[in-house]
Length: 132
Image 1 (cartoon, rainbow, N blue to C red):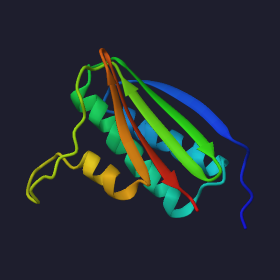
Image 2 (image 1 turned 180 degrees about the vertical axis):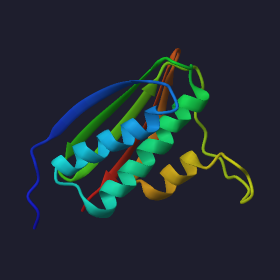
Image 3 (image 1 turned 60 degrees about the horizontal axis):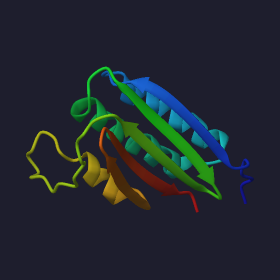
Image 4 (image 1 turned 180 degrees about the horizontal axis):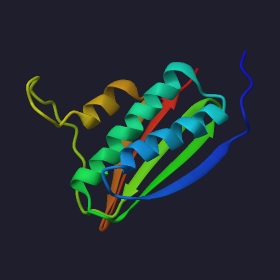
């Protein structure tokens, strides 16, 4: 039985630049590890964070803020990525030879839950990874 750290809430604000996904991935991985989430769950969280933040860089306003929030409660890692774009993310089923369009399909396949919230001038994509 692994001991878990108490509930964790943290936030990182990045600029929507090409380096943002890498920075966010590493930050989430460190937060998860410090909260006792390791192994495959940590790696999945790292991958999904990179996918969602990359979507904000490609589809959101350039050089605007991207907010990554992490909550860890009872072995469940919840990650929210917020941008100030007006788009509504959609899960697409792409052809195997398509050069892109798989980000949310990967999130759908590997997370224990995920969703989006869209309000004028604000889009949130969230996912959860369960370490149990």
